[in-house]
Amino acid sequence: MIIFKYSFFYFLKNSKFQCMLEFQMLLLLELERESKKYSQLYVRVKLTRITEIKSGILYNRLKIT
Image (cartoon, rainbow, N blue to C red; front, side, top):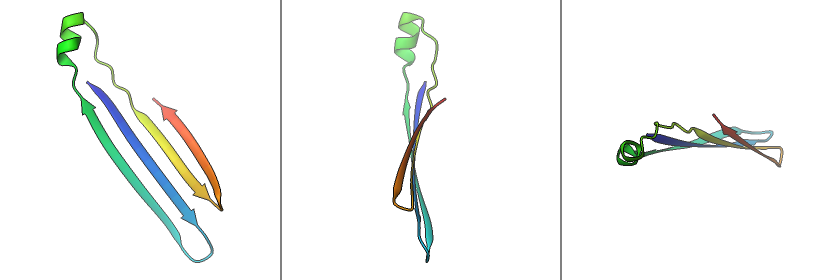
């Protein structure tokens, strides 16, 4: 089973309000036939991308675990 998890964080901050919106999408792909056919092991991939906007500066971080 291969798991891809996408996390998008939008952080907006100014003098009056502070808002944070988080969107997560979980996509599951099962490769049981291919794994059994080619004798491969199951792989779990977690992909997290965080986008932050602070004071008009855009920060992108890509984390693969």
